[in-house]
View 1 (cartoon, helix red, strand yellow):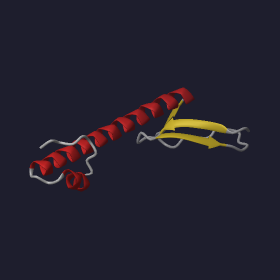
View 2 (cartoon, rainbow, N blue to C red):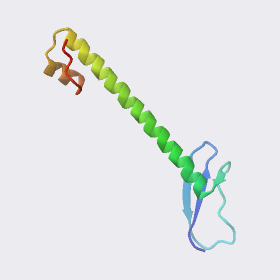
View 3 (cartoon, one colour):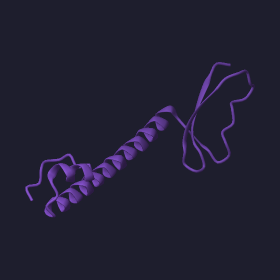
View 4 (tube, helix red, strand yellow):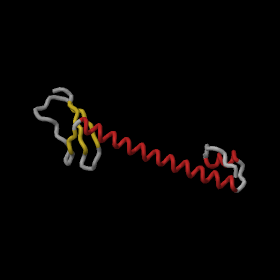
Length: 98
């Protein structure tokens, strides 16, 4: 028997692609509670997961940058020199004229 790729979603929602090989009389069984997917369904679901992960990562980066800018501006408003405020906060945006 040639290699066969099984695509499925486990009972807890994990997407899995498993390659099985060897001579067997029957198709390999899926784990208990798993739902078999076609290759296209698997790729579509995986793309959705990757898109959601990227969107979440982008949100985290944006929130971090907003926090850095707020901290930088607060330090500058207290008279901390620009270079020091940047070093303390990690802020790399344009200079605040405070």
